[in-house]
Length: 216
Image (cartoon, rainbow, N blue to C red; front, side):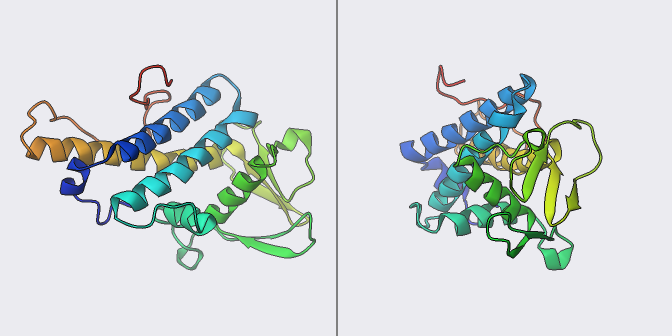
């Protein structure tokens, strides 16, 4: 995830890149807020998907790559797959039946998240309790459940909490990792006030906040 992002590059981070980073934090925080306030069905995933969209752009920019909106699906999947094992190495692979076309479809975890993202753009929350006609549903009734999902007739009902939590872990690593790398870069450049940093996949809910006043 952090390959070819150097301390020297982070010392030269642009205002646009800092704003992208702040936007990632803002979306992450809004998702946490929705979770703690019990607004999981309609607000948790849209915010995290916004965070992934912006994080992938920031990462590419910091690596000197094209940061335009082209090839969005490919780049969305690429960002998530840096932290996920491929199906051939034991990663997730499920075979479903598309509810709209009736055709068989295969998903990795990243592809599952991207499909959820696409439905969000139709203002569909995929909440299993509402029984939408789709082949991926999110069950929010088992907050402490141990199952990932169940399949019936080519349709997958996922534990929404588990899918949300795994996506949150990937983004948390990116956010805290970039924060740490910026702090370290400033420290080795002589800023003695930049001396404390840590990377985590599980920051406390609500602890990641945007830097700009009034954004959270």
